[in-house]
Image 1 (cartoon, rainbow, N blue to C red):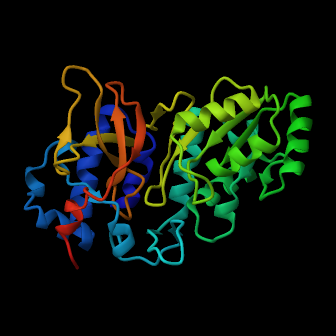
Image 2 (image 1 turned 90 degrees about the vertical axis):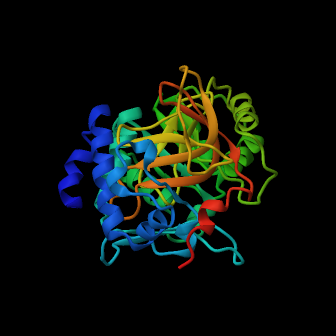
Length: 331
């Protein structure tokens, strides 16, 4: 059945989204043992779930402690989150890497353009230093598709990078510089410059390299250093196969096959609605229809604000008080 959904996922509209989400939910309940056990622990009746707001969302921490697979398959690739030698990392077992490629390529084109329209430069040192990064996998494929001679990855080669950017700027070449936050801040401090044809996109993450800062602070520093009006952002994670993007002001939008809901921080099983057409705040739930082989319904550890038009912003991380959903299932 998942193969039959592949062509539907990336041509979905608002009306079809809920129908397909409910189909995928019922399928994953049947073939994903961990998800089934979690739904059963909540005493939820899958037959009685008629709206996406009623679907149980699996706490993202289960990707650290359990194998989250819908069906039996040998994964083509396993993505692993970053961490230290003392932490347990999340693992996402991907049945079909081509599905991930289709998701991030079509997502990128939905918000920007074909990768070949850009010179794409990745400044992702902490991710390149380990294997299994879904972000590196994505950027590497976009680099290939850009087919530009200067596209590629840079570790700590800031002097080389600034020279390349100067050359590209002189040729008025559109550039996408996508980087982890701490590396972009390091680069901005050492080599501030005016960038007219370069889009700066941060992916978050200090990785213990610098003190934590809110997104607005980071963007202010980058805007001042590179004399640009806005800083773009990417919102993705190991446990998802789709990404949301922000073109400025920290407001993210999702592609049509991805949707954000907000749950009550005090009651993790309660989804808040945009009643009264006003923004709602709480913990972020994500529906990612591309996750058909793992779990499409993820309760993240991020706090956020959801606006009536579907855009959202990330306000920070939840503290350890949001553990009750996880305690419902011990396998």
